[in-house]
Length: 81
Image 1 (tube, rainbow, N blue to C red):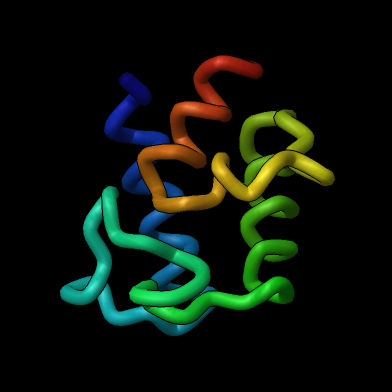
Image 2: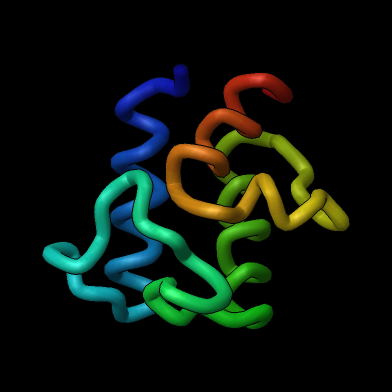
């Protein structure tokens, strides 16, 4: 299970940079696709850039299963840093 600090930083990025309301975003909220908060491929690039800069983990070309929600992004970071 990924570090809560990592999850909080990802949530902060999504809220501050991508304009998602904090109240609408939990760590297990779907980020992309149907029944999600509606992020798109441009938003995923912001997340990829943040993860690379903040943690030195390259997520370019990583499968979409690692972008399902904040939990899955944080788990990927934990397992690759």
